[in-house]
Length: 142
Length: 430
Figure 1 (cartoon, rainbow over the protein chains, first blue to last red):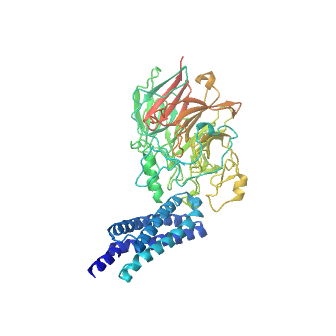
Figure 2: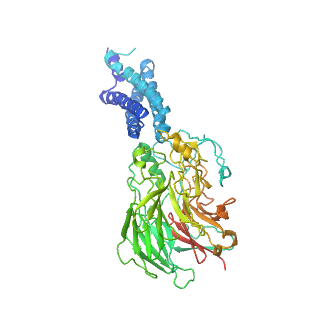
Figure 3: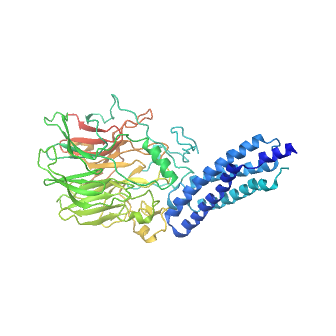
């Protein structure tokens, strides 16, 4: 029983890990909403907001990614959910970075690619956080 | 796509170059440039000057000409003016107060700063005098200080006009004066909020009735919002007596130098066009500035080539846009212009000199030299000729960056170099 508890612990995000992981979602979501506002209004400030929110999302996502990697390295069984979670988070971060560069273009050059990418990154971050955090409740690992 | 190793950037892997061939020969120059399709990679091409000192070297000038440094150790010299007695005034300073609105602004401004001087701008006018006419300017003295990023200079009838980044001011001047006798009088406020492009270029009409002030846009292409572009990207005509102004020509993205054509009295400008549309877009240009005309920015470039980055679009403005007279090539960053005179030598007698500060948004750097655009009649004709080169050496290092160019009636070209903080003087050998 002791072994199984330890294993489970290693796959669970700790509080800091969970904060970074969960925080990623509203940051990327905020960027998406800002993109929608810019798309509809041409008001450049929304695009500025989106760019900073993506930068924040990348920071949180990147820190969560470091935790996820460490957990993966320490896991005895490298497979299943832990790997899926790590890979999802990695893809989220990489596409988030591409989206940051997309948002570094001037004025309307951000559109429509930036908006589409914000949708993709937001959905990915939500799924990654869902999988990462649902380990908390499951209490064990297959 | 290929990587350029020229630059170390912050934590991100920057410097993904644009695509395709970028040889200098693809640069379309002249009255009717062939423009490629707009393009931009995930990251803009960036190749920033690597500054080094001139040491014993100098810019290269044509055979039969001599170049010498007549003043060094200045505090960011930009534009120069030759006074009636032959004294040279140098405007020194650096302006702008544009907030960094995006993460990109923070990163890009840091990178671009590496290619400029680290000296603090002088906010002053320095006077240079060669009393005995031997080509050595033995006197270097501060004519006026506590100005606000002075740039454009003009003189007529005992009045010296200076375009600060926020106001057009006037000094009284008598021949031989080496120091301003009083603080300047303000003639007119100039648009200065943000000042993304802060340089205010200046020219005065032959009859001294009107001053023309070039006011640059507040963004590359409206990325700071349309609202901040009111009274920007235009040339103002200002009444020299009353200070009253009106827009003289609009849609001119960044008119960095103005001059009056001898004989015709026509106003000409060199203009810096927009970035991040690829290595060969959009051409900077030399053009006559015709009253009431619209030159495209931000809706279109070189006539009716629509720039979709400016939204909402304005088809009526696009339709009204006129083409400039002469392409200098994209990204060369023309910052100085002056018409030549016969005393400059036969080959360079008829035409205009243009100072090119040099590119950042191009893998294969362009500019970094002074060129001569030959004229036939009243119009530019033929390919530009290199006049002063070697500012960017074959070793890839940059020793100087030309800004203002001024023709001295005695037969010399004065070049301000804001990287080496030097004033160069080129003369035909006699």
